[in-house]
Image 1: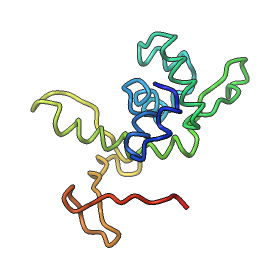
Image 2 (image 1 turned 120 degrees about the vertical axis):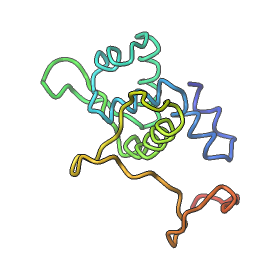
Image 3 (image 1 turned 120 degrees about the horizontal axis):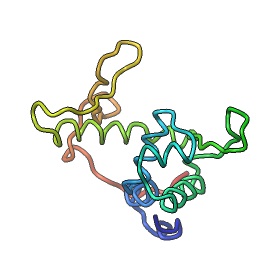
Image 4 (image 1 turned 30 degrees about the vertical axis):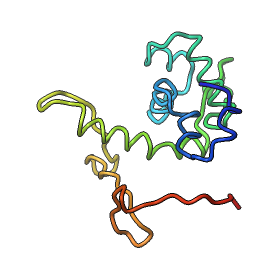
Length: 150
């Protein structure tokens, strides 16, 4: 992950978001946090990631406000990484990537995980981009315009 200053001159929100959460390890760390992983050692064990890379990614995600650190919930001397509201708002991005992967990256009969709704134990509905009126939008149905954030 490069320094946040590198995004400062880019007017594209996609480029800025990719700079912050777009690398593989950052997304997988965030994915694990959605599954209630909180401690450095748990992230390291789940991801098999070198400690220096994990430390770097977690530090950067804390610096940009995706995570915050808290004292361990069990009262030990360790700290935990908790998603902030900004971090929880990454959930649709992770779900969208998951659903794309489920549809396009597994062969028929190949095992993979599926995201289920806790209440009904059914797969989560396919995410779609919709207009303000609810109409499904495709890439050709949209355009970009430069604005100044209020």
